[in-house]
Length: 269
Image 1 (cartoon, rainbow, N blue to C red):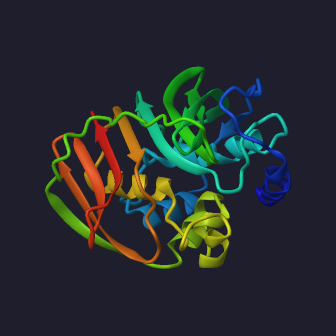
Image 2 (cartoon, helix red, strand yellow):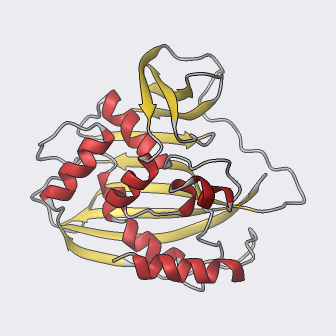
């Protein structure tokens, strides 16, 4: 159950003062013998647009399986960023081969480093999924704690020439999407749940989970047995809203349908 961890994270958040030179915890939470529940896998796949049933796990599903480990790490006193209001800003996934429903997974998460950001401090968390001691899936995620900074450190753009990609689909996103994805993923960060809880943390309305937008785009794109994916979450997706999925070659993006805002950009190879 993640509720005790969420409560612990909420209690500790006001006590933390994030800064890029803070020490990181050395612990590496690990789970062994992990196999997905068929019902949970089907619910996740339906919500994110993956085809079901299938014997291989969706490319983003190991992230959900390992989320309790990330929560365990981020809610320790040693983790320097507050859990409340933490924003997922990027993810890089390398899948050497798709894990299957028959695999017994060993999952581990560790904090790699902190980086100054123009809006605060980012932490990088690395996740590994192993089968019989061999890494089959790894990811590197950055999470931003927003706070006042004294210097401008803009993040360099990744692989975009500024030209909009051709549109392929338009998706209306309901107001309760954050609550529905939170129920499946366990990520019940208040910024995703209700307008009031989001406003308390600096957002005008609830925002969609970055990992839902990533999963939905990858489900639409289709992913091979082995793949390397790079995704940047550029702007929050306010709920409710309508978004446009666009793709060309290895590149894809998610845009607001009523403005020029790019919410997500990524590549898959």
